[in-house]
Image 1 (cartoon, rainbow, N blue to C red):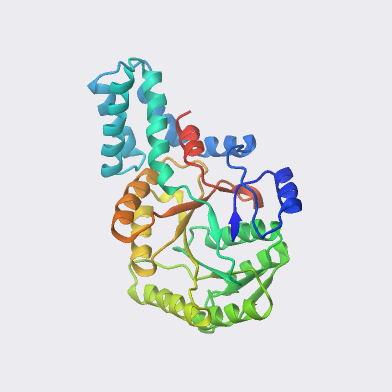
Image 2: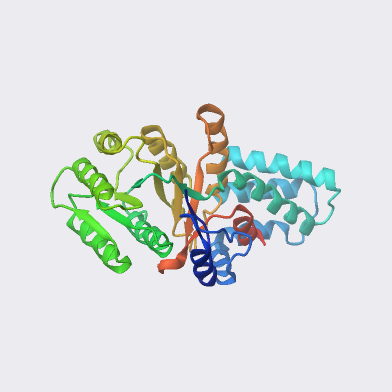
Amino acid sequence: MFSIFKKSASQTDEALAQRSAPQVASGLNEPKPSWFEQLRSGLRKTGSALSQVFNGASVDDSLFEELESALLMADAGVQASAYLLADLKRRVKAGGADRPEQVKALLIDALADLLGTLERPLVLPAVKPAVIMVVGVNGAGKTTSIGKLTHRLADANLKVLLAAADTFRAAAREQLQVWAQRNQVEIVSQAGGDPAAVTFDATLAGKARGCDVVIADTAGRLTTQAHLMDELKKIHRVIGKAQLGAPHEVILVVDGNTGQNALAQVQAFDAALQLTGLIITKLDGTAKGGVLAAVARWSQARAQRTGPALAVYFVGVGEKLDDLQSFSAREFAQALLG
């Protein structure tokens, strides 16, 4: 199985040199300081609003009321905010916390535990090719995220083929072509054709060329436009005809600045395609970083109904190739409130 974890540059070379199977070693317990600083900087607007609640406060009902307001302002949503507050109060009582800084530390623990339900590495099946379908609304950073993900896969010595299934927008095809050239991978593309046909051809081409992974870039979709969502469903079905069991991953790219709208996107795309994971982008300067708590709480309910919880595979801060990193719940909570 292909396991795509976070690694430092030195860890990458060592892991690839030592592996005897197509798997890359994990380095999640040793986050890059530079990346953590980027994440903390990106979440500063959200974190400062939450941290202000603890400045000079007493541990009483007013503290929890202010914290509830701050969580709602950070777009954590009603359900997640209520869940976190109930959990926090339980922890405060159990630990006898009587100082604001102690309560803040317990909130980090509570948030890390909630977000931990979203933390799962991207593990692709050993079947060749493993097919990843990437979806999202316009402007979420979908194609850029594909380029960064391709970089990680190619860096792990995996042979990647890109499918430019956004066939109606020349700029989208050109952008993906640039990423293909930059990462030195192949691409299947055609102008003005049926996007489902492109993904079908790309999957077959991936088989014929011995590719490890095929990544299908799809056109941006507004979830309120039923005919566009139906086209995504068609692409999903057609990929399955080209290869049994595919797509193996259906990943939604979400703009972290959209707040509660991000949760609405997750729900709509999941209803249509049964998502396996998320990439959260643009976490640089957002005041709405609390939305991940809302996603985690919804995902818990989803898991009770349909099986495994949704995963946040990667988060992105910045535009560089290595600015897409594996999601760590503890790291995110510490960056937000630490």
